[in-house]
Amino acid sequence: MVRLITHNLLACHAKGCTSNNFPLAFSNVQIEIREAEFNPEFLKNFIPKVEWNALVDTARQLGDTSLPLEQPEMLDEEFLKSLHHVLLEIHVEEGVMTCPNCKHEYPISNGIPNMLLAEHEIG
Amino acid sequence: MSRPELQAPPEIYYGDVEAKKYTKNTRNQQIQADMTYRALELLNLPPDEPALLLDIGCGSGLSGEILDEEGYIWTGVDIAPSMLEVALEREVEGDLFLQDIGQGFGFRPGSFDGAISISVLQWLLNAETSHPTSSPPHRLNRFFTTLHSALKNPSRAVFQFYPSSDDQIQLITSIAQKAGFGGGIIVDYPNSNKARKVFLCLLVGGGGGQQQMPKGLDGEEVEDSRARFETRRERTGKDKNGKRKNMKVIDRDWILKKKELYRKRGKESVPRDSKFTGRKRRPVF
Image 1 (cartoon, each protein chain N blue to C red):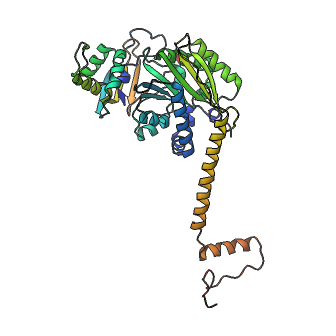
Image 2 (cartoon, one colour):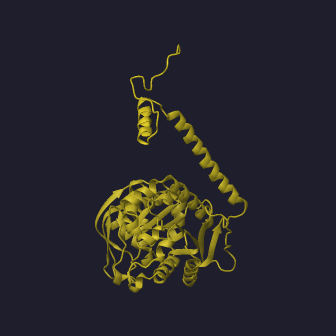
């Protein structure tokens, strides 16, 4: 159940890993598409928080090319719909997330990422 | 019985059995629901704006279900895999993370519009190993600093928890303040043993009086809630009694069982069993 909305907020939190620790890279993923309720108000509020390049890159990596490379100024219905699909309907069920900086791996199983750190990695 | 947080670490205490028990218990459900609604009230989010919330210690999603109903998008973290499994089975909408909140969060700054946490903080107050990162102050500090940065400005985080002493409250609030939070403790129904609930309401930003601390519930509403509770119990009690009266079938088996019991206890003059035992008398008798 890792949706891209949370993936776009998630950085590595291992000890000493403070820069270049976002976005976590997916590998070996299994994806499931589940429909969710379309909520344009929420999306409009959320857009300022999105790290656009990371979102587009990740979406393309997962095989969804509906988002434009540049964040559009105009928020039309069609754009919001595809944003909704990318953010809230793509669920990563299995796979691994790897920190681009410290290479820490967070395994995802059954849709739940394991964010636990070993003792020496706790900041 | 001693408090659960003193018996075992959360990921062990809430194993498969306890996780199911906890989730199925209707009294737990009711209390959790009440506290979640109260926490949302204390969060004081702008109405009609769907917000992104963080549910800290989401467990089996009892509070998450209410967030779903209220139309919030949420992310939940918990350390007990069994609880998260139950949450998956219950098909809550939020994203779930297996995470030790004492290790801190990795969310980008300003990610969430608010955070709630029901009956969790007390679990952070026990050291599980002697490693320095396992001491409660260190874990609390890590938790509050990373949470503070993950919340947007201005926003709030509301924690309901069960402190066992004033020292614990002192420890928690002082560390939260060091991490940059404003706000403090709110006690609902301080004069009631049963209804008393402690909330830690932390404010991010909003200095200069933009955010006002909410007040705890007290006075008459204590009576109110207690009365509500009593009537509910009475009513269900009556129902039960009424049902039991209706359900109690005095048949031959029941009579034989009773007679056997009396004989075992040494009661004299218990009528002997015969083919007439438990039969109805004829009206002509």
